[in-house]
Image (cartoon, rainbow, N blue to C red; front, side, top):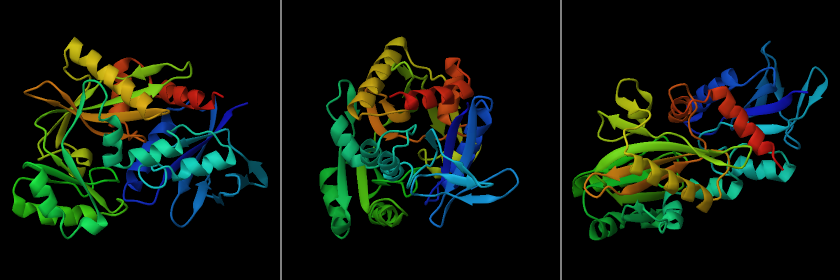
Length: 334
């Protein structure tokens, strides 16, 4: 019997387009002889599956089942590939917990927590050899006075970004105080970003992204790091998704000691946040101090052929299909 996989994509935000591409790649890599894969689109209007003939079937949300040609289809596992709401912020995870369907991502609490960059930093602040940039977290009622608070607490330049959300949407690098108020407005007004804004002191250094996952044997596996070099001011939305603006080097050129230190830090982060499945951690290596500075964690990282995680899987010697199968089998463990 094939394992029936609900491959869940779409979402309620502008990241849905990337989610569709990620899900298509996962689908193309999974072993069709081993897994019966049903792509499921979740949008604000409907939850549905479209078969090869173009026939749409709505999801029964009472038990997340489909009826296709008068045949009831239930699932063994949900493979969540929604970047942003509701697949990355804990909402779907809570739903699946309630109906008893296993899934491949972090649980509801971890997913919700890690969507909040400021709260995540607070929990990770005392991990050995991991540093966090000095920051100010503003809430909606701080909007009128926020610029003054930031100027009094932090040194220029700043990174201003929504405290939730992804793909660097709503983010600005601020070099002069005159740029701060417009940057705060941009971050507060970004869609689905939690009405909170995080402002951090800028860290000068090399930028890296690195994946980690737990396999079916319960072992933590750290993937090779990717170094990100961009012609943009920083690794923003355009740098992430417009070809030619960014150079990505996998595996990154790190010393053996730096690799060992990064691996240890990633494992500590994974355990501290009670992660499941695959996650990706972004960090800076400060040039002068050789310190690793935490940027953020992504619990549903991109899975297009060019995304960091597939690059790192290939660099580790694994095939993407085997990697995705390992995530499924780990999630099916009791």
